[in-house]
Image 1 (cartoon, one colour):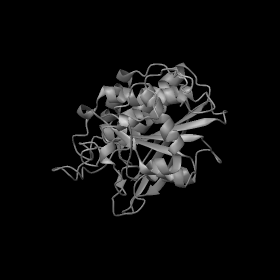
Image 2 (cartoon, rainbow, N blue to C red):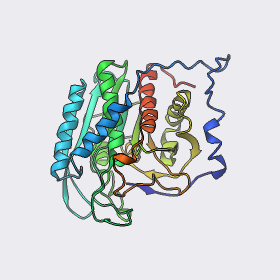
Image 3 (spheres, rainbow, N blue to C red):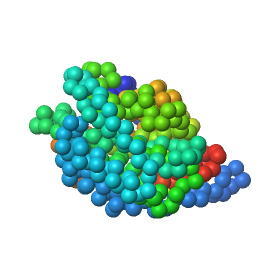
Length: 329
């Protein structure tokens, strides 16, 4: 991944955005500001960290490889262990160079009978080349942050939901074949989410909104308000960011506007017509992604537990706050 369309950073807002006036982090409980009450169980970061290590233990998660197959089987087993109803959407897609790829989108559903649903996703495949590295550019990357971190958050969410069932429907989806594209070939990334958006696992599937996680485990991560997320799902983008600020994670979730990034959420917005936001690490100093993006250094050493905690706890709170009919202000 990923393709950045154009830059909209407002540099003057970079250091002021964590104190955005829309957010009451003091929870003063004044007449016009409802008191925020946390509802979620604790996100266990050591568990999520283990789930990253386990994914890396299978080797490279590239379609058509043994490591990919082993990891897929393990993901299905874990989601079932965590009491989800699991659907494996297996199909064959074509890579930009004409190579057929056997892929699997893995869907873990809670309360499948509930019409009121939200969707949280991440991609589980890893990139076959280290094209941003200074050496070994033709070798696969470990993909600890770029892929495994988001999936680890989904797995820990699933573990928590298996113990404490939410009042709404929740679908956790691991997208396949996200990171096999090239920038000069249109729609060559995100093949799994493109397929699902055209052919969802359930005919007529609907969700109130969706959240995509990408590169959510590096130290000092900053998540800006990405362009397509603002265009298609501003209400839910602000809702999630406000919850993160209420929880004390404002240093990660910044309110400044960012460029449009082609990621899995784009296809959910434009094909599946589900308002979807992207939580993706952006480097404010360079306008790019996290420092080890698409390099051999995207290994377990690049993972930071505090960042995982910030994202995971925010996602759990989003789920358990969703029992309300209106977003928290």
